[in-house]
Amino acid sequence: MPDTDLEGLLAEQIAYYRTRAAEYDATYPLDARADADARAQLRTAMERFAPYGRVLELACGTGQWTVELARHATTVTAVDAAPEALAICRRRVADAAVQLVEADLFAWRPRERYDFVFFSAWLSHVPPQRFDAFWDLVADCLTPAGRVFVIDELPAVAAVDRAAPGQPAPAVRRALTTGQAFRAVKVLYAPGELRARLTALGWDVDIETVGWRFFCASLRRGEA
Image 1 (cartoon, rainbow, N blue to C red):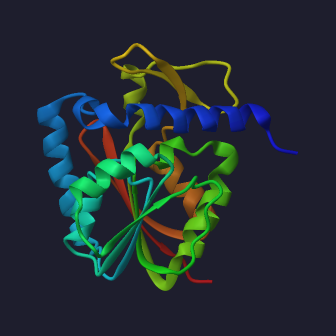
Image 2: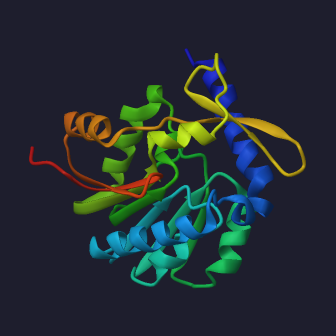
Image 3: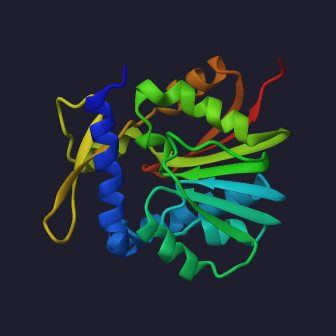
């Protein structure tokens, strides 16, 4: 039986990013200079892990990272549930090798396998109840030698977020410049905890922190 409370929270999360799309790029940074420095370090780490070949980006949003992936990849398939964000992504990445797909990632399944899977600021929006199933999806997206690169936020971010207690998954309340407010899932992992969970699911994981706010993780499937 579906968890209707959780489904409602996830639907509101999509509504939030659809409504926020037009202002997302202008309102994302907490500290513009520090975030720019962190982004440069994260980009270097991603490039070191070599995002080549057929690349899949999950939850691409407005394309901040899609444009970086397109510099290296043969093709990029970028998936997001918000058509408003995908429209901005298309304007940002006017490249025939980039295919945009509108889909809810909790319902979407790949039609092919990819050499490299990337997602930024998405893992923290996956409810704990969906964690294992989500990583099964990631595995299904990969070629046998495929690799994964993840960027997300560290637990310290909780100090500057507004928690939404009593939800079916850890969540925050997010307000737009219009005053509209929405709930969104927000699960923040300490690197050791995340490494342990992913290792238990059969992944080889390397995690590094970038400043107080971010981490990046590079993953491959472990030996059977």
